[in-house]
Structure formats: structure tokens, C-alpha cells
Image (cartoon, rainbow, N blue to C red; front, side):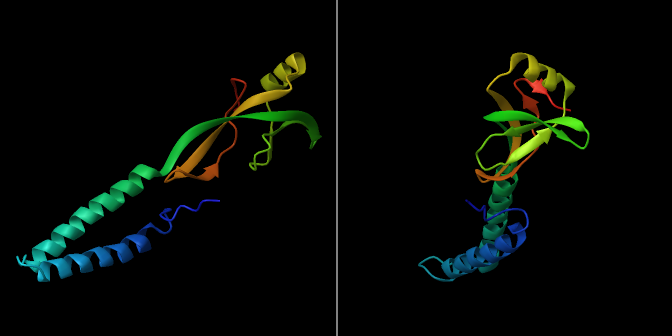
Length: 143
């Protein structure tokens, strides 16, 4: 399983540690070399550019929501005195129980072997972080 390093809980510590490293390198570059650059201006400019790039990447690539559609097996069960539809995509998301009279009618009349289930998925830097409850089953919205 891929772990996104810069999830929101780690963003500030990662930012501060990496900023220290970037500013340290900028200070060394400003002090050495043939042409001496003003230390204060170099460090400030480097810190500003790095901050914009870091937080821009976090805002752009953390918490991205996309829809994911998967084929799932289904079955009807009694739970707490009412009928629920259990959907299992068999891909590690686990089974989820939903209740929808419209979906129940569709499944009992059509009796498809599998259904297409649409989930909202949250990504951090391209890695899945969280999966929400199903939003649609074979085009039927779940409320």
C-alpha cells in the first residue's frame, strides 16, 4: 500500500524541515562561488519560491476526489427487520450495505449477475487515501 508522505497531517512538519534544508543550501550558495550574492535577499527569495511551490503542490495534489466505477456482486439480506442490498467489489474495499427501493426493484426484475458501482475516491499525490459510500449502482443514484 502506498503511503502519501505529504498528507495534510504531515504537511507542516515536512514543509518546515525541507524549508530549513533549502534555505541552508541557498545560504551556502550565496556565501561561496565567484560572485557573492546578498545573503538576506537570496535566503528570502529562495524561501518564498519554495513555499509557493510546496503549498501549490499540496493544494493541487492532496485531497483530489475522483469517481471510480467497479463491477460488484450483490445479494439481498434482512438486517434489522428490513431488506438491504450488500455490494462486494472483491477488491479490498469490503462489502457495503445500501438500502434503496428503486435499486431493489431493478435487481429483482433484471437479476444481473454483477452491477457497476460508482464510489467517490480521495487521492493524495495519486495514491488512494479514502473511499466513500457508493453513489450509484448501474446508473441508479443512491440517496
